[in-house]
Amino acid sequence: MARIAVIGAGLGAMAAAARLAVAGHRVTVYERGDTYGGAVRRFERDGFAFDTGPALLPLPAVHRDLFVKTGREPLEDVVELVQVDPSSRHVFADGTAVSLPNASRAGVVAALDEALGEGAGRRWGDFLVRAREAWDRTRRPLLEEPLWPDWQVLAGREPYPAVPHRRLLRTRRAGTLAETGAWELRDPRLAALLESHALAYGLDPRTAPASAAVLPYMEHAFGTWYVRGGLRELARAVYERCTARRVEFVLGAEVTGIAEKDGRVAGVELADGTAAGADFVVAGVAPAVLARLTGGAALRPAHGVAPQAGAPSRLTVLLALRGGRPGGTAHRTVVHTEDREAELDALFGAAPALPARPTVTVLRPDDPELVPDAEHEAVTLTATVPAFPADRDGSGARDWGRQADRMIEVAGRAVPGLRERVLWHEVRTPADVERDTGALGGAVPAPALAAAQGRLLHPANSTGWEGLFTVGGWSHPGGGLPHAGMSGALVAGLIVEGPEFRGSQ
Image (cartoon, rainbow, N blue to C red; front, side, top):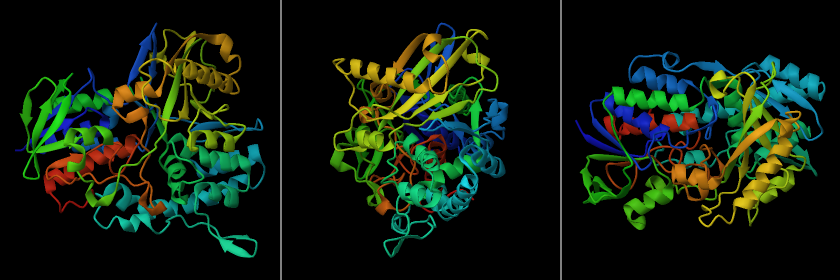
């Protein structure tokens, strides 16, 4: 039985902790905050409740596997899962709107043909077939196995089988997601639909590889799910699974250093001056935090993959509304910007700025647990914004308030009479994300993607120090709830089975 110290209580870290405890190890989680969950938080006021981090659950099989492997108990026994249908509603720049059924190719094709014109559905359906090929080619090495020393095989060949495009007597294949949309979908609204999946993860579709096609494919193939009571309920269930397996949680305990002796970890040092010995350390923290804990240059990312740089953040506006949720309302509506290029230039330019007309995701869950009564509605707006360091002097408050107002204006295209219904609103900025997660500027990690010379891969879970492993969105296989859960499974496998571990079978 080994002593294992886990730094941070995010979902990936807790997934690793539960699996390691079941394997017979003595696991202690040190969390600097006063609660568990990492970015999966809840805000409550006046009988309203909101998720302030992720709000929908893709690929629930990852968490189903966690609960089966750590207690032979179905996920559905500990939380109530609801399949979101329609999966999403999209309001495009020209006013066209379409609702896409959940996990139904035929339904999606029919909906797109009806809303955008005959042939639109077929082009999107053909794109999903090619996206499936990219998924099949990369799923196991990219998501289900540790990042091996020969990771370069994921960095070179583009797995998406792009359709050849003839232009100026030359034939080319799409190298970026934006080119895929423009050349293969041939409708600016379909292109906007495709690109919105990348933007939601903080990726610029003009530079994201065509392999980013796996992002809409995952949603299409495995569906979109909601946890009754909000995603915080999933965090609660994972936390309770950990405690049931005798994982010890020490909240309010900030780790200030990782002890090392002869190239191997020896334990962790805490802010109160105490130290805790450990045979293994699992760090669920952002890259800058890990560098500080290990003395920076003393730690080298395993296999030469460096942490991603320049990841954007999210701005979240929580709206308490008078008036109940109308029947038939879509859970999720994406309101697309009227000027995609201007938005992308603002977000990903040399001097990142807040776009004047952002793309806004409007979340309207049908959940009585989130509102004081049936005569009120809880709505959440999210938009991608640049990652800015915490405004410790408050100088950025006016800019965030102005951007929140823009988001409310944009959301009004999807929610008639929105402004008149607002009782109050709360703005969650990148500074809040930074405080919750420790990521500089509130940056939010994207999922790992193949191709693009490996710049969208994440560092391996093993590190340059023996016995030190990384878990969560900033390590392989990257950001997003399913990927965080996968990282927990990979780290547990590497510790329990050693370097010969080859991933889940």
